[in-house]
Image 1 (cartoon, rainbow, N blue to C red):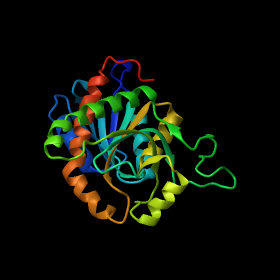
Image 2: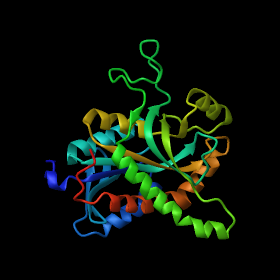
Image 3: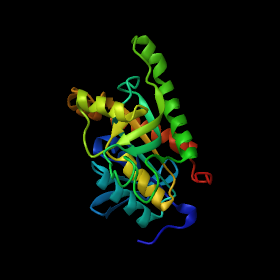
Image 4: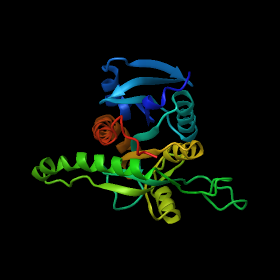
Length: 263
């Protein structure tokens, strides 16, 4: 497939699982000009979301799946920027279920090429922590805060806590962290990590290699402890898609088609 013209370079949106993006898929499918292509075994939705040229697909779970998906979209569509959206476990004790984490940095917590290289460092890059794009990340955080602010009146009436939006380190690895010992070890090794998931740092490395601006949005589905395997599917089913839909909708309003400052 030939890259689209520079004026129409799309925004790529990736999620790992159907439940994390079904609202976005449904919205895109009703837009005129929507197409469904198959690239690398993935169904890729091509069209527009709220006036923005977009490509949208599901990566599946894990770093390899995320990396191949991101690479395929870059090569096939010459994407202008990339956003990964989905759920994650809480790594920091002050991050709660229902909060939103926007990644400023991403790291592979299970990467270790020592003693040849420092632990966590990806060889030949000199990096262990891959920074997200500053401008895209700021816009994504603003969109998340705008959405979360709508909870306040409803939450006050129910005597519950308003979800918070956090920015910081997100740790990725090919392991679902769901035990007290596992999360304690992660906190010991990476005390500033806010969330733990299975794809974001792989997308960050690919985007670094191809010089593509990116941002990562994660909604906290569980505490990454012994109850994580119970909480995760419930949150995924009932909440995840709604968060992704509403925050990405607002994000696109901050990132209109004519925007030229995402680099």
